Image (tube, rainbow, N blue to C red; front, side):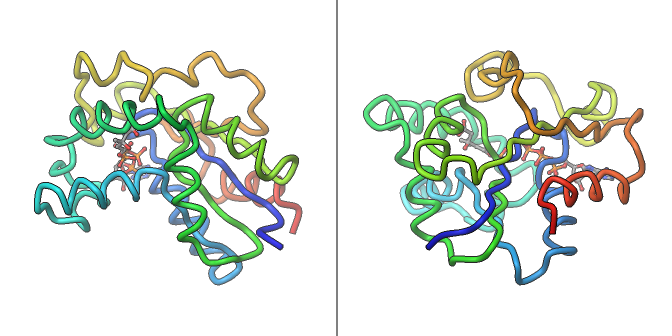
Length: 185
Ligand SMILES: Nc1ncnc2c1ncn2[C@@H]1O[C@H](COP(=O)(O)OP(=O)(O)OP(=O)(O)O)[C@@H](O)[C@H]1O
Ligand SMILES: C[C@@](O)(CCOP(=O)(O)O)CC(=O)O
């Protein structure tokens, strides 16, 4: 027995993936667990380079210094086994009725979850306008914002829900209610 529902969140840098999933966690509390596919990547990097894992996992600027190297290393690993980080993140997670995966980035991430959890998954895309993202600290970087890590899901169309977390978005409570509706608790 695993979780009964898995919410897969995707969105570009500073669209608000962590912000919204943390708010959702606040509502669902111990019924849910947040999983991060980037956690095993950042753990590896922290050990290898003697970095601060908490800072790498936070929304601080710190992680941006290492993003390109982490993308390149993790893509090499994915070439051998596209599910390697999804699998580790799931293996390390406690079983709860709801898993919230806060950082889906690639079609192969969705493929892996579909293969392993079938119709228990719901895919949610978070969008936000560029100006809002910039106000949150986003700066376009060639080699990061134009590669698979940020763009692979741009042409994915079968989202269960698209949430606008930018200046034209609905109030937070409505956004969260839409997500809860998807879970149908
Ligand atoms: N709706 C919102 N209202 C206020 N602040 C927000 C909102 N959404 C996001 N933020 C803030 O914007 C910043 C970036 O958000 P967050 O870290 O959640 O983005 P992200 O998509 O996880 O980014 P990254 O991919 O770089 O990790 C954070 O400081 C967060 O608190
Ligand atoms: C290396 C990487 O996992 C960093 C993700 O960091 P964050 O989710 O933006 O905090 C991105 C990727 O896997 O392509």
